Image 1 (tube, rainbow, N blue to C red):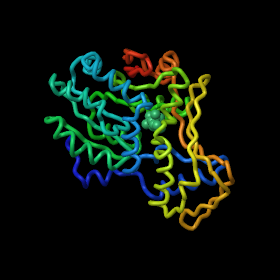
Image 2: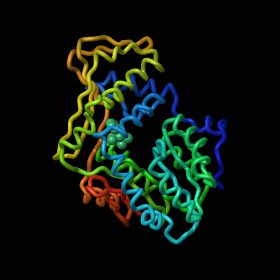
Image 3: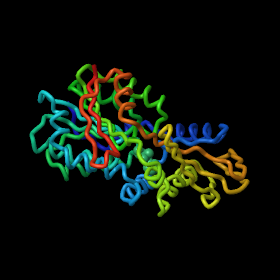
Length: 329
Ligand code: AVI
């Protein structure tokens, strides 16, 4: 039976260590070409910048998914509730849970028998949800889990054996290359049982200018969001990056649907991380993030390839974004 997590329990399930962060950063910055893992964008400062980004004019995915969740709440919840048996509603990468709050409120108001288990890599996010949701949604049963998705999914399965409905919203699936996303969906399926469900939000291919503008906003929030990872390395790993010596560059390829972000070194420079020195030559890039956009057929193929049956699709008015319900076969 799920219960509300305490701060001590919370600390014990925090699996992201400084050591792992250091290893990943050093592996990425000594590779050729250089890369950093966008999962590390989300420290407290990164969470704040992502909030800002979601509210900026050009960044449409959050607004589209919010429209789906507010205008089609009943239909989505009906599909999730299915036969009405008790279930665990698990959210991978919960963030501030603004979108899922729509669903949670509807489920509570309609007396659905469920527990909410948000999973997030950010400790900050999980403690925020553990504290605020019971206030904004009285009666909610919540167990926040801070850590990597599959570790925490296994943990969720060990806490309860109820039917699982796993939400993966916001096109987080897009932050993996297509082949990795396919493998990820298969691994999800392996962690679920027949009859369990997925609710997956996916950003669709659209006018390339619309996509590119979302990742190259005029106010420079995406740039600050990327540079924050260098600042995080300075803060946590004793780095001395000068962020004025890096610029942000985003590209979108309409053929493949891949939107990619890079940081470009503006000069020959040496950067210290602890005792190690990393050299950059002028114009060298660090590959920071992929935000993959999909066609509807590609999404259904990905579901079926992983052992899920596509059940419903909910689109926003512009058909820029789709929330998909899949059942595990
Ligand atoms: C969290 N994720 C789905 C966002 C995206 O659109 O890829 C992260 C982001 N990166 C730049 N802007 C937003």
